[in-house]
Image (cartoon, rainbow, N blue to C red; front, side, top):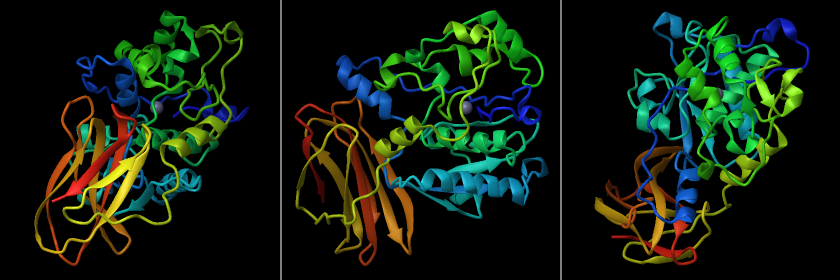
Length: 359
Ligand SMILES: [Zn+2]
């Protein structure tokens, strides 16, 4: 969570913070080329654009149940992100097995979420939550909490951990403050969520955005530098910042109005920039096992979905980033059905050009 409006003191004081689960992260140490490393590290937790993220609200165990008002607050927050015109879509489902994002409302567990594709890499058990809301989401602070946790779902880290923010903490004060009411965090949790800087190679050229929805508010005295926060609190403006909006629209732009078709045995050349994506529709002529593969000196993530009745169902994905082989998916496809393969480029050794083939 994060933020609150100016002087709604009753509902935000003292602040409860979002506490992200610790994950190992990918080892990218074998990548020598720093430019390649930066492109991979920046994108490796993002979904391919166009992904339909399914979400589910737990009804049991009872302490995970949120009730209709809390659930509606989360739906509203999904809509706020979606209404920016992004290419991702969100769809509520009524079974945890069908959901990528599984949401609980355990009031004793704080608010937290896995980040982007960590939801499938670290929390793929249907009985497991990927997001929890630990307090009321119908206040202005709560509405910001819902936007913040969904920001994590979309792949955003904490903005106050941006190394470009240049924040210098009074570390002992931060540990002490977070160790007490109402968060009661361990030093490890405080380090993971506040003190630790995100590796510089994973953040874009953007400067510190202290109004980001991904920024916590901080009481006066926890920040040594910039010096104004020694004597006054840092309180981000409520809602999404203009940089949040710009960033999400760059990462997940509106999808093109039409999608070209990929025919069997016909190599399709494409030329895109790092971060960009190319999609192809597939209409198999036979029901059999097919292979999809990219060619060229590229790092890509390639994801295959089946399309039916407005639903995009994940079939398989492959991420070859940082390795000197290409993305490849083998899957049994059915004649008469329709599929879409989405390929996002991390890095290319040959000016973004490569090709994709179905065989
Ligand atoms: Zn957070």
